[in-house]
Length: 71
Image 1: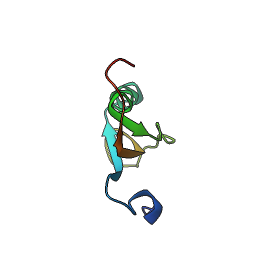
Image 2 (image 1 turned 90 degrees about the vertical axis):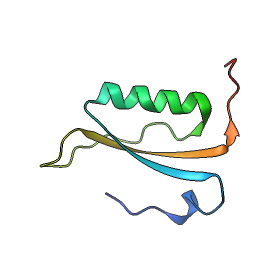
Image 3 (image 1 turned 120 degrees about the vertical axis):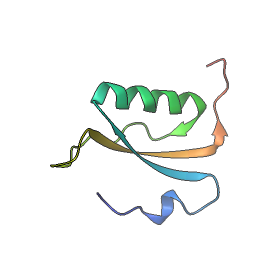
Image 4 (image 1 turned 30 degrees about the vertical axis):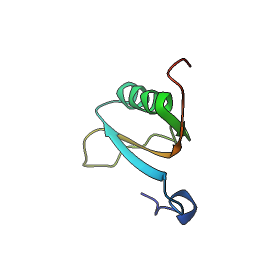
């Protein structure tokens, strides 16, 4: 897994989330849910780590930018 670039966590409210799920469909559903709440990068390329269960992806989010519930 790549190191986290400082630009993605350089200010309060910026986060990097590494997500592991059983399958790609579940992972995408979780990211879609996050996008309903905050501004996110969406799913980065999904990968598998040999010898470890599930699929993984990294998401960048700005929790200072909330999405309204009406969207």
